[in-house]
Length: 286
Image 1 (cartoon, helix red, strand yellow):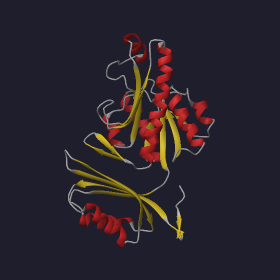
Image 2 (cartoon, rainbow, N blue to C red):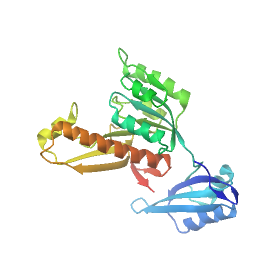
Image 3 (cartoon, one colour):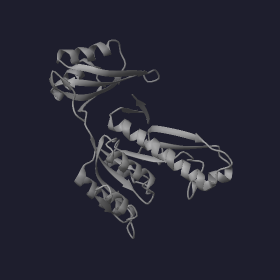
Image 4 (cartoon, helix red, strand yellow):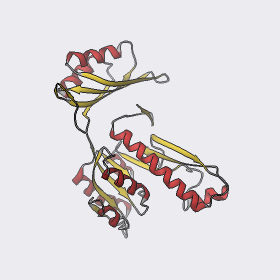
């Protein structure tokens, strides 16, 4: 993303702070920003009443020494303050997929039309099914087959490949393998998953057929960060659509895939713009 020009070329930064709430926090933060000749273009703040936790995000413009400003902020904020300041930039990402193409294809199309604030480094899959699709967009494709391999051995191969890219985020675009705790720990807070919102009601094979047989009236999708509790990580984005008895289970599946694409796209946009705070297994999003 190109920095804005204000007299001369300046850089855009995202400042994120979370800490215990107390009086005067906005003043203290603004004072540090002002003293360093920076400009706040936009800011948001929120206090969670239950935990008395303060959350702050700002888009800051100027030239700065990040370590100096972070140190100055920490000096005036509560001792538990976490301060993040990073250049507003396109994120480096790796996509992981299996056989379903809808989420992967949607992301690849958005990237091609420059709607995605990201640099797709590679697609990794445990099958070759999506290789032809990926190569149409000139994105490197790697198949790491899990056939005849123990889960841990397969993941070691994937992790070795991921370390070559060192991505900011890993997007599970319908990657249909459960990740072990060791894998998740390696990229904690950096893995985003998408799944239908029938869970935990309809698990296992063909959840849409199960849902059809029960006569469900809504279809939804959930995008979340991955943690060690299966499909229970902090939720980033969700959506639902209404359906009726006229839809077959295949129609429901098609509608569900459309929702999944939208929800995953919304979630990664929020993550790539550094709009998400994770607190007590839930998210605060500006």
